[in-house]
Each structure stands twice: as structure tokens, then as C-alpha cells.
Length: 114
Image (tube, helix red, strand yellow):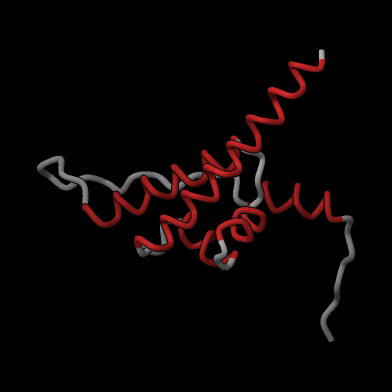
């Protein structure tokens, strides 16, 4: 049968974050210096999501839950393997903005209480 390993959730999250530590790179331009449009847009979206999520200290699972999408969707987008719908981009954008507002409020509270 399959073997399983139990680890504390914090360790699992740490390992998960290490697993998706890299960002996808822009595709190679053609001989005229032009980048393939679809692949380039996918990479730019991926980089934006990864940077915003990390800045806010969110895991892929946390962002997926906040956005109401599957973790696999976040993973595919962050690996530039999928072109998202406008609806999905909107959900992720709203989730990141809400998390940013919460993050900012928390920071202000700490400053005010000092």
C-alpha cells in the first residue's frame, strides 16, 4: 500500500511554499525580438499573483479559499499553465485586495497600540 507521513500543518505550509518558490520566466523572444503574446500574458499574470500572495503571507490554499476557486486553479495560474477567465482573475484580484486591506489594518493597529 501507500505510505503516508504526518507533519504539523505549519511544517506542511513551509514545505509547500518552498515547493513553489520560483516564478515562471518570460518565454524566449523570436528572431525579431517579439515575445509570444499568450505565453507572455500567462507569465505576467503568474508573477503578479505570486508576488501579491507572498507579500500578504498567503499560501496557495488560503488564496484559493478567499477567492472561491480551487487550489489547482491557483497552482496552474502560478505556473503559467493556464489562461484564466476574466471571472477568475476578478475573484483572485478581489481576494488579494481584501487580504491587503486586512493586512494593512493589522499593521496600523500595531502601530497605534505602541
